[in-house]
Image (spheres, rainbow, N blue to C red):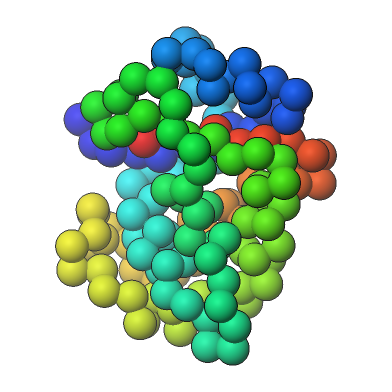
Length: 149
């Protein structure tokens, strides 16, 4: 079994009810907004590298951030970000240019990354584009985000 990451946005008004559950039904993840497959760990490491000209912490929350809730799913519990947090993540991801992403990729220590050998900078950049678009669409719609590995 491989570890893949899925993100799904949902109405912000449902956040408290979602966090109160012990577990989400499997169907919740049947149609994710984005499935990062195995690129999640590479993206997390790349986005955790700080920008040269500012301190950004929300970009690093895009993959492994959020408040955990419910049961351990084998790779930890699901996590959620509020609509406000989604907006902060979206803003920081939107500020990362292709050049900046490539700089961070080169600076990231990917030796211990899960399946890093499967993702060169081009593959990671494509996955980043999907992640960024997912957050920007959710932020525009005022939605919260659930993350699952």
